[in-house]
Length: 196
Image 1: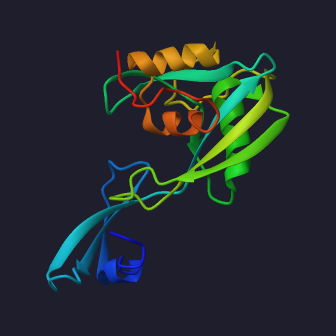
Image 2: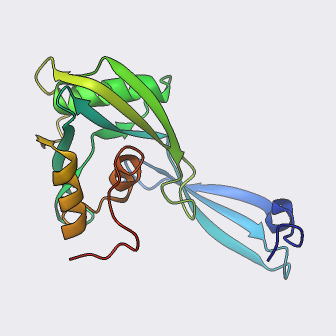
């Protein structure tokens, strides 16, 4: 479909009728909202789940030898430890830069001299309402011990670009948001990408 024949995005908007909140105590990072909406194609009304959250951040933190500060932590959804980049929630009243600086220091003990904003992605726009902001931190170096929350256990490791590419190729590194931020700094895979 050419750009000239494509309908405007507004033609795809569903009419929002109302919302209700389901106060599920099990959702620690999200507020569960159920929206009632009308499909403009057939006028049928549907309920759709939205998980509301504050924005997230993650970063590629490069030390002075251009190694990336990576973390491993147990992820409850998949039931094993994953390899990923540092990151976390933007706290109320913070901007994404302040959150990135704080999360890098808390999770790894590293601080950085130079920061560059790399843009944002929608983690899952089908059900999430927030963004994940990507940052590049350069000249990162250890400055303090980790300052982990009581519910965190994080191992820190330094990886070269070649080691990161190998971890992607083998499937060891498959955290979608980590891949997104890393791909803005490194050429991670040849195209078409095939996994070993």
